[in-house]
Length: 194
Image (cartoon, rainbow, N blue to C red):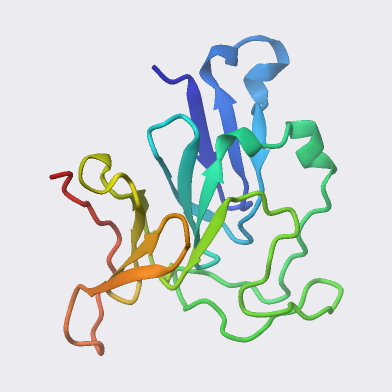
């Protein structure tokens, strides 16, 4: 039985809570640890089921593999320099992720479309799918038939992306539809275990 609760939010942080600590003094209002790595809001979290690893999907157009043993205590997390905010407000529900480098609040240019969180503690980052217009989920492949060797996710471009968990490489891309002009986002995918 697990006592771990994991939350992801639009501040790009993943927080880890211990159910046994809820209601015990100050701990009822504070997570036990924080995972940093995404640069935009977290859209989905999926545990591997081994008590150690989970995968997240984010509006920053990435999925990330996390080891829960690498979380930072809340005090250490609070001491980190916050990520700079973009000048231009981007809303994933109304437009695609910006393809041009942005600028932070001080006018400094972002290094690329996919800027990097300097506090990233994720184990692996997976890129290739699109998260816009709707929330997109990601999962580990079934333990029974694949040994959870893959991470897979839907995509706003109407495809399913399958990544190798260890290398981060795209193993396959499945087209949900055949007409690229009228694409329906693939929000969720379920890999049958047998």
